[in-house]
Image (cartoon, rainbow, N blue to C red; front, side, top):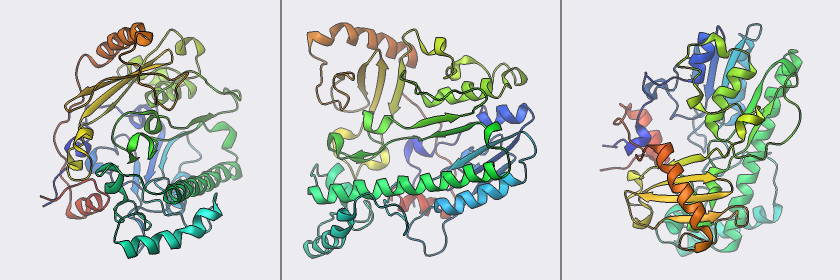
Length: 393
């Protein structure tokens, strides 16, 4: 039977406080719509939401999750029912995610790569080798790179990146539908819009493809945009920020911070991104990647480990726990792609010591833990297995 995949199947505890709970406590209507079948009530993700919809893929669809067009259509319908009141909405799109298989009509950033795609697929079929056939999992490309440590030919790499770019273009068009809906209803400029990713993708950087393994910049750096004309001037924040900062930023920006309980508005959730003073003072950013137990048969043994990273003043230190490997140290100002490890260099000695102290302070010396697997229905387990999140035993 499929088994829960280590910490990644641990449900959110009822003792954890969500942003939706904070806004619900402040009197807002709360609506959530997602294509991600990780984000279910059984996983605790619906906490604080008055309405929570997990949109399923259409029967026979090539992807296991619903397309952005379906999700946004559902979101517009649900938001339309609460738009005349203060509301908090969460909309989660899965299109810019493996398998990279954009919908017909999505913007194509590399027509040459698309022209090559049939030839690559035909050659892969003749050779019986998993290069690329429309899905990095079923084609064997994932194992080719992450397990065997081999890189596909340049044309395959270009195709994969082009497909991902097309997915981003498709998502952008769906976001445009949400903006248009708010504009048509006269609510756009009085609605706070936050657009953020939850992870990047490793397109062969550091010998990997996809995400979920390690804490290098290609999987940590994500877009984050905030739009609210009454209080947010156009501009770009150059300081390092974190997704946990969305929590206090939205509470303060919406003017509801004092309407929720003290435990929900504690500054331990992050900082107000729009407060320049809060962003200063050498704040360190922390990231962590679990030991990926379900990857035992799909990645090289040296990648099965817990890694933690801390970034401060342009320096980044990566610590290794629960597995093989040595610490790493990078000067991101001079080496943003993390190609020159300075851990053993006298050049980075002072930065290394400071980062080690920050890492211990932020994590209290502990690696991530989990509470145990969630109870999954047969349908949920099958969906997760087909996306590679569960392993057969």
